Structures are given as structure tokens and as C-alpha cells.
Length: 42
Image 1 (cartoon, rainbow, N blue to C red):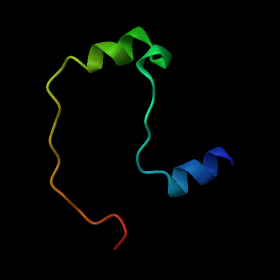
Image 2: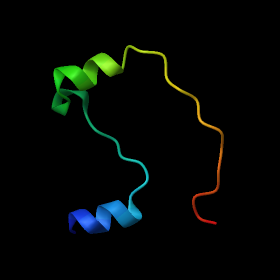
Image 3: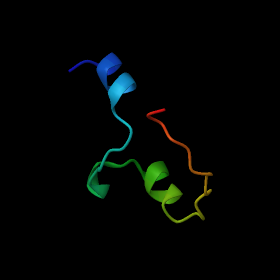
Image 4: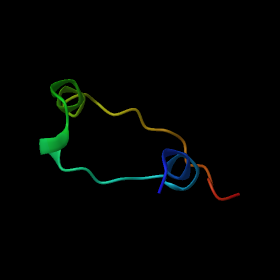
């Protein structure tokens, strides 16, 4: 699978925290921004 394939077909991923950078781990402690629901398949 190529990077283009992931751009086109992947919406969510699960990544073990041990693979995150320190900056990415710091983002996990912030309050998330809740987005309004939308149908990505429409």
C-alpha cells in the first residue's frame, strides 16, 4: 500500500503510544476539540 492509498482510504488509525514523539504525547494531555458529525461516505 502506498501513501496515496492511505490518503484516500484510511480515516482512523490505532497507534501504540510508544511510537509517538514527545510532542505527540504532549497533545494527548490537552482538551480535545469536538467536531460536528458528518458523513464521510456521502
